[in-house]
Length: 111
Image (cartoon, rainbow, N blue to C red; front, side):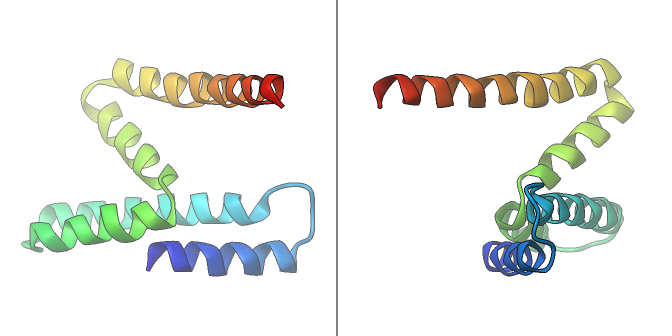
């Protein structure tokens, strides 16, 4: 379901706001982060079955956007281990973007 919602929302946003900026992806990532933040305390403080928690966070939100998992994990980590939260943000963003660049250039070198 998350993947289908991602496709539908992303397509709708991109068609509604034609632009070189990836508004569809941005809206999906922000919506996923909001949903993760909204649902986490509810699931954490109630007797919701672990299977439902897994289905919502890993299944739906994981299919909708993995950015929500990154955002939630980083914020939760910041409460207990702020240094690790900063490390996670740096690794995910700086190293992640660098690896996209490396991958693109490596692929181009073979084409």
